[in-house]
Image (cartoon, rainbow, N blue to C red):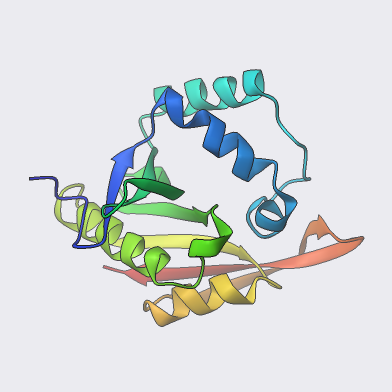
Length: 173
């Protein structure tokens, strides 16, 4: 049985055939205005492939597609990175790229599944996330799931013609 699932969703390791969806989401400014911590640049297929190959070789990170079990629909991805075995911590990120599935609990379900995996299989004790200060839905998602604000990097990311704050939220597992 796959431990990376609940009754609604399954987390599946990203594969090359997922790159078309990833590219679609990365090139949708409605999505990336909240998720990208660098400047928005649309990416072509070769750039997506290079990104995938870098991530594939990175032993401190894993990316999982979020798949609705009922209809096998891929709606986004969740990842951990900066895996630090010595200090037992990691960074998280999540994107629900199919906008009609946002706000329906899939992000919370994905977080709980990945948190359980990180705690019980990788022995991670603390996970953190960086969120742009104006991204109220993501701040709400993580706070609702027990994350606490640990700090604010003031005027850290240039977006919409001005510098935006970057919040750091963390949770001990």
